[in-house]
Image (cartoon, rainbow, N blue to C red; front, side, top):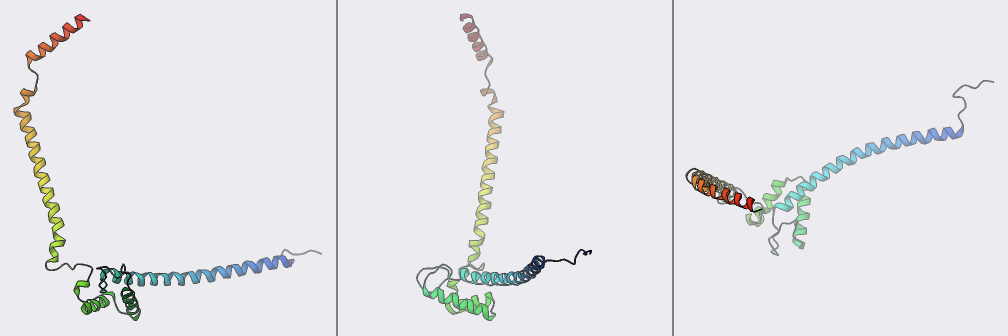
Length: 180
């Protein structure tokens, strides 16, 4: 009696095929769940980024020290952070929450100096100072080059050895050679 190729599948082979199929199904489920998890991780990262922006741009009003809410360790800072978290979850934007906080407690609690009014000087002065230092360095280097050029052109003959001094050195050298 002849047996065809696939007529004899032992129970061990059937168990192997079944375990392979279940492994494939498991991998597909894991890939799908991983995609959902990555999307949730992205949403969590965006939420944490917004919360971090709020916590680093306003000072705590507790009176301990002038620290941002992220750094302050008092209970007030923890309450403010929880309030910010709840407001973000409720759908408010970072700008709305920050504006409301500053309207309530005052603009002195804004950790980022706004670029307006007298504060513009603080933003512009570093660039002005760098330009001035560069200009002074340029002028000093230019003058020193001119000084070197004028010294070379006018005082060049004084730096060269005169013919009589050269003849004296050669004579001394000949006398030294003869002595040896």
